Length: 249
Image (cartoon, rainbow, N blue to C red; front, side, top):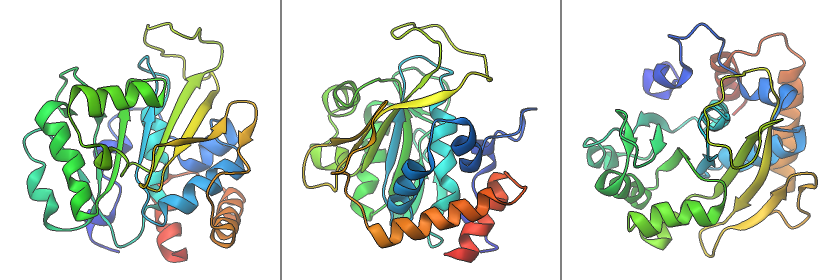
């Protein structure tokens, strides 16, 4: 795929910052993922699943966690960033469309009210939707999206995976922004729906994936092998992992 639309958008890579962006391989080695959970999540993303990552405070690592799976988005999905006032035209083709954040805060690029409804309306065109939210539970997430912004329930359920991350040593409920990039991130919970019902918890902190987590065992095993082989290489670059996935896919 030489077309730039199929390359992870530069804005999400944070190429203007000094630190090297963390890839999915980094997050398996450093947290928040273990290999089993990463392979499970990857198996759904490669089949077109949408996902949102949440945490209450800023700086916990939700953006890093969210963007790590962009390397394994299906190869036939062009990437797009959903910007306020510019969303409806994206419905002309099926894409992986990323929101910088679903929030009533107003930095440039954040989606709320009509912009957020337009973003979720892309589900009608089969978009793979990806984003972040300031929330620590599915209930808080649903209240913001369905409650405050009147997104239809069926469109909310288009988000197959909703996961929450936290930072080791950080007091729960504390709202200050975290800047320590050395502390280990971890998943507190992961929730899944196939769209037919409410999100059900499939992962819990300390217990890992539930035996009832929906899975395609054969495909998940292939994803695990892909990740194991990638972990055996020296590179941890997100773009190189993307290229490796496209060749494998």
